[in-house]
Image (cartoon, rainbow over all chains, first blue to last red; front, side, top):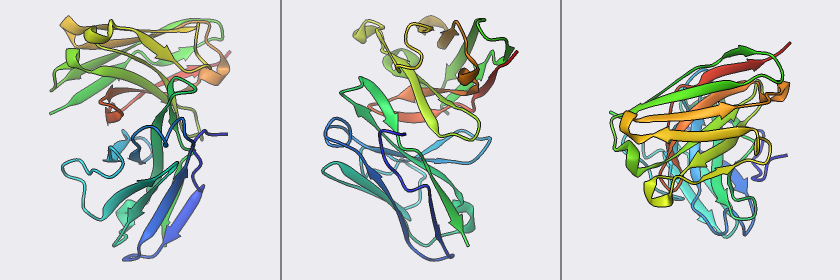
Amino acid sequence: QSVLTQPPSVSGTPGQRVTISCSGSSSNIGSHDVFWYQHLPGTAPKVLIHRNNERPLGVPDRFSGSKSGTSASLAISGLRSEDEADYYCSAWDDSLSGRVFGGGTKLTVL
Amino acid sequence: EVQLVESGGGLVQPGESLRLSCAASGFSFRDYYMDWVRQAPGKGLEWVGRIRNKAGRYTTDFAASVKGRFIISRDDSKYSLFLQMNSLKTEDTAVYYCARDNWGIDFWGQGTLVTVSS
């Protein structure tokens, strides 16, 4: 059971917009910045969003992040087949004195 | 270009020890906190622990699942990060990632596989 709650899976067709939610609490998302990662099996995870809604250089603007209270979300617009991957949210947790991750969401492009 | 390259993974028996290394390049290693994160087969990402920089007195934090068994250290002169894993359990089997911590993990290595099995 992960501290941050994500849906196990989402799906969409090419060109569609999908969102992935990440629910936490006042000790993590409510107090700290949220990061989002894309992970393809056998590769290094890649940061898509840092500090809630900022995109690192090189990340397409099809990816966007938002945060409100103790929840955050990642939106992917103009869905592409290469977006098929696992997506994770993460934040620091004051109660645990550690970094926590969501359980991961598998995105399928139909 | 930022690079993190892990090494030292392998097959060990329960109760044994293993030391992982991470070679960093392309950034000012000494200025950053550094983390270890793992992924067990078929599971999600799990934070293992982190070490602060010199300004943070090189102090460490650990996940409850490894506290007291794992030690994180660093050698800033060699741009290197280490994870000493003791009293290994079968549930420690995972790919271990070295990661740069910039108020959140902002860069990851490719990972090294640790298998704990008799």
